[in-house]
Amino acid sequence: MKKVLGISFGRKMGNTDVMVKTALMECEKAGCQVKFLRGDDLDIKPCTGCISCVVGMTTGRGKGGCPVKDDFHILDEALMECDAVIVGSPTYVLSPTGKFKVVCDRIGPSHDITFRKATYEEGLAAGKPADQLPDPRSFKKRVGALISVGGAMTKNWLAFMLPTMYEFTMSMGIDVVDMHEYHGAMACEHVLGNGTQMERMRTMGKNIAEALAAETEEERTRWRGEEQGVCPVCHCNMLTVSEDGAHVECPVCGISGEASMQDGKLKVNFSEAQQKRSRLHWDGKLEHSTEIKTQAVGPGQIPDLAERKKAYQGYAEQDW
Image (cartoon, rainbow, N blue to C red):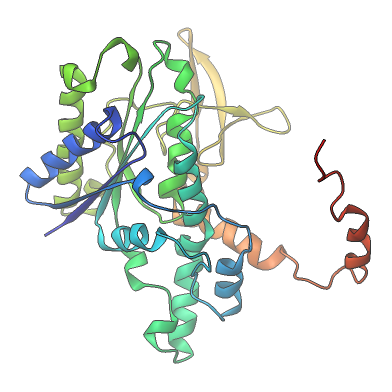
């Protein structure tokens, strides 16, 4: 039986909670086992930036674990167990909640499948016992769906929502097959009174169940969302201008394309080569992890670093 995890970063029984649960209910009807977690119910502390997770994996001395002691292990175990995840967040100033970002920072490099895969394979070759290796469930092929909820009647007040929500799925290589943005939520007392949105969540649940039942990789990862977006990989509409000013880039995927106007509409062509190196795909993630492994320097490069830091110790940290 396939397992589907739903995670809400909204208020208890608020719009986000109910939308995630509605999608889960459809998954359950399709024969899936479901589980729901609420971000605010978990005591998950911010990442400290100690990078022990990455250093442990790149040196072979660790398996990507985090030294911070809190409830992250509850979320981690649920993620390792699931075959699909549905993540929802309300909009707080254009973006997902702070708790959502805290969780993404903790998942980040510690769960990057390229780091974990290399550490796992190298450890096996060296004869290390299983308990000293990354969890093999990390490499399970999963699908996902993203839900953003915003009160604003103008859609661009949710502009950073869905692009940012890819931070949750990116490192783990979860294939997002559907996403939905509910804006204008303040015009309805509760989403339970909005039949269109409720039906969309039922469709999302069905889309996840169909992806889990797919018999081919192409069908499993097929995009099932209603909007295609400008980027053919992440299906978001956000673009940035390249450093040289000659191209546009998808900030989610980190790939560049050629922009043109066709019939009065902006069109962007992303080559197959660029799409392949999206950071949502293995090649793109491997490009980044290789960059870290080959170019990041360790301690001791600046012999008098401790002395240089003295002028900054406690500087301006007193009360006004």
